[in-house]
Figure 1 (cartoon, rainbow, N blue to C red):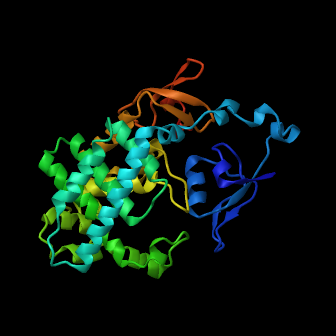
Figure 2 (tube, helix red, strand yellow; figure 1 turned 90 degrees about the horizontal axis):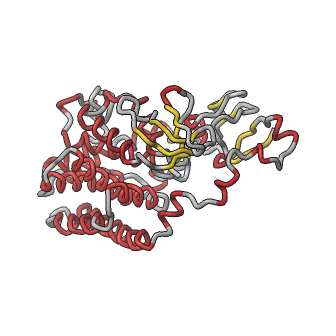
Figure 3 (spheres, one colour; figure 1 turned 90 degrees about the vertical axis):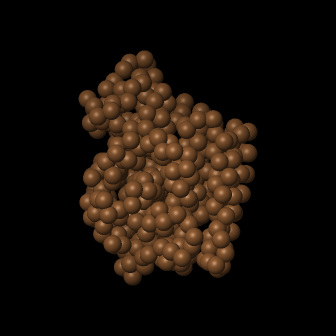
Length: 369
C-alpha cells in the first residue's frame, strides 16, 4: 500500500481502503478501481490523499520503469506550459486582467448607482479587443482555459461565460448585433452572486442546507439588481433563467422549454462548461472531452436541443488533430471525431497504430497534452 496525493492519481489504480469526507460520509469503497469520474469526486470533496494498492511490479522495485507508463512525459512541457510560454499569451493575460477590473467597476456602478446609464458599448469594445488577440477559436479556448487557472472570481467567471457565449453565437450564425447582446447576457448573468457573502461563495467544502438555499437564490438577486436598468430585456432574463433547465429540473422557477429565454439557454451551456473545465481550490478541472461526457450523463434533454448539439459537436471538433492523454496512461492524436459518440474519436497511437475508442468503452480521454 502507498499513499498518493489526489494530483498523482491515475485511472486504473485500485483504492486500498474506504475514503470518507471530513464529515464522515463514505464516497469511495475499498477495492474501487479509479476512473476519471471517481478522481474528480475525490477532488470535489477536498480529499488530500488516498491509500492505493501496489501492483507486483511496484512492490518488487519502486524505482522500476514499470511504475511509470510513459517516463518521457515528465520531461516534456505540458500543453498548458507551452501556451503560457508564448509572448502573445502574456499580452493576452494583461488585457484579460484589465477587462476583469472593468467588469468589477461596471458591477459596482450598477449595484451602487442604478440610476446611472450603463455604457455597454465601452465594455463590448473591450471584449472585442481581447478577442482580436486570438487567431482562431482554438486559440481563444486555449488561452481561456489557462487564464482560468489563475482567477476563479465571479468577475472572471462572467468574463469567461461572455466569451464562450459569443463563440457559441458565432457557431449558431447569430448576427453581430445578436452576438453583442449574448456577450452582455454572459457578462451580467452571475451579478446576483455579489449579493452573497464571500465566505459562503468561496467556501471550499460542502455547503450547509441553509447556504445551498442562499446560493440558489442568486438568479433572483441578479434579476432584482438589473430589472430597473435601461438594458435589453434578454440580459435581465439571462440572469434570472440561466439555471433553469428545459426538462423543468432547474431553478429558481422550475421553468420548462419555451418558457426559458433562448439567450439564457445559451448562457446555461457556457456557464456549465466554464464551471467544469476551470480549476477550483477544491477540485481539478475536467478536460473538454470529460466535460462533454458530463453533459451527456447529466442529460441533453436539459438544454435546448439545437444549442447543446451544436456546442458539443463544435467543441469536440475543435480538438481534432490534438494530442491527448488517455486513461490507460498512453498518449495519442485525435484523427477523426465520431459525430455520434463525441467522446470516442478515432486515435492514432504513438506507435502509428489506429484505434477506434468505440471498441474500447473503458478508455477515456483525460487531458489535452
